Image (cartoon, rainbow, N blue to C red; front, side, top):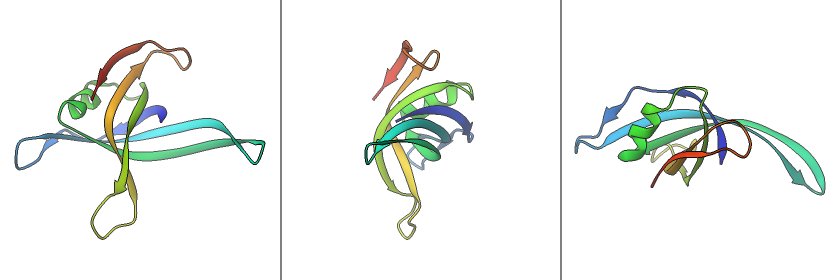
Length: 104
């Protein structure tokens, strides 16, 4: 998934001392559905732990990022999804960007 970092919460730590960073990513793209172009716009809640959390904290809001990871419920009883980031790439510009750093 690719998008723009629009918000991030303060760095926190688990009881075991693992850094945790939560953020919000705005995604915009054009996808093909039933042979017809469709504009897709959404905001996705995401979370990174360990080294990924530190990279999220170092990124300025407005940074273009490319993320990979998995979706999971925000809580055991909740149905709201959140992206758990395994890999984050910081990209210069919006297209044909240069990877500045990758973690994961």
